[in-house]
Image (cartoon, rainbow, N blue to C red; front, side, top):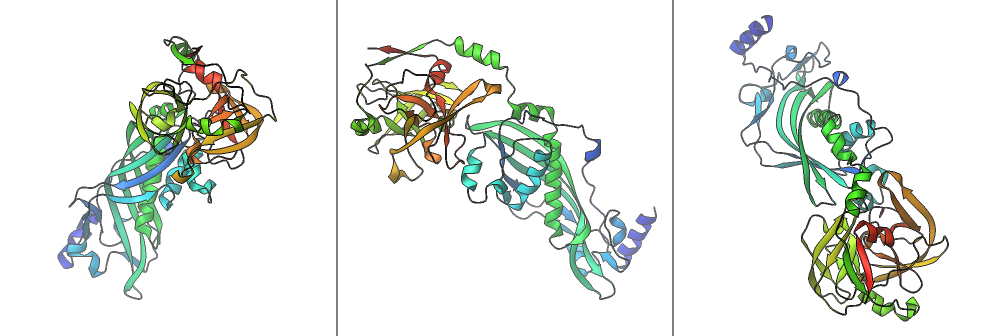
Length: 449
């Protein structure tokens, strides 16, 4: 009652703006405890934040005098919004633009989004981890998270110093926001889920750029609300029974692929022919023919959820291929083109190449002028990802972005594996999925013609 009387008095004398009612937000200490533990789930990266308010929406209030801000630390000489610029017509502010970017992956906003995710145990792909290789670090992520801010309600205190009778150029206050989250699956090439959460941001100690800090803290709080949701946790974990996935793979209808008698010439004798068998898939991926009648193996991430994909051969000729089969567990896909007697790569007989074995790969670095680049290394180790029942051949071959889906070959050009495409931030070695694991997962049966 006293506040209302004071406001009526100040309005009568000078004009007064009431504080804006904030959206109800649950305090962090009252939220459910969450910890992902050892199962961090799929790598996730914050992508962007966009403010999407309707033009003319009132989103800031400048309440008059100090009693409107119970949570702001002011000295007895400071007051809020006493100057003429925050009185009368300037006592509120309306959104005047369309969509406005609020911060991308390598901006200050990313720090506030990543913090609660990291605290709760998510596998966060952060630009801070790789200052000199940002592009490749982000490439490791499987899920992208974007924030669309649909509502802002904020009360801003522009500090006015009574002693000097001027603005102190310091801002404090509070705000609540409503965030519409979108989760983009890079392997499926589509938005796979959306969520809505509220967040509250408070700046108690007046500071320069306080208005932006209030929104950043509100975005951080909205992220914390998102990270504790069971449906979001299940999505990131991608929890599917591995036994069920393996059962589904076995129940697939076999795809018969005709091959010819394996070549016995050394790779350097067939280098030109082998390069013809390797193609660019999509914008920056690699694939290779495994039969003369047009079957191509590549990474699933290269094709996403498309039905058709562009293929560019070693001479730069562009054609289309149909996606025949996908396997998310191993991140591989089988494509088909209507061709006959095309150059292709033979599949090696051995399942597990020995350490120190000399190996080769052919890929398409991001620079298209370097298409069909041949590289050499050796098998350095054998790895396993238990939760996906997946093995990897680790080879000491440095690769870049365009190598995702490239073949790993022995000295005869026979395929031992396919580039996994998810560790391109590495500089000294690469992971390849064993070719026979790929054939089994896609239920491909090779039949000699």
